[in-house]
Image (tube, rainbow, N blue to C red; front, side):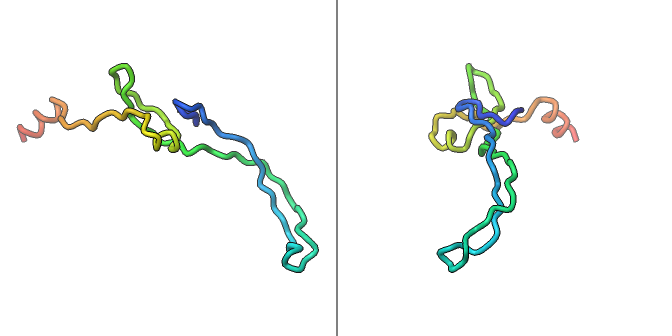
Length: 92
């Protein structure tokens, strides 16, 4: 499963991490100097959720911000046991 939100299409974005040294001017120094710039990825906060779509249960990745809106219809928790397990547990 890729790192893409099923509903909003949010995906990883590129950015930079900047390393600095020195003392800020407001603290009495001569200012911050950049010593290194590294590229990095900002990942979306994706959660794996089971949803109901067209009457079938489907596992998808959804952005947490979209989940909070309440627009996602989650699949109900399964309350019954499969027949194979029920027979084996009752016979022993």
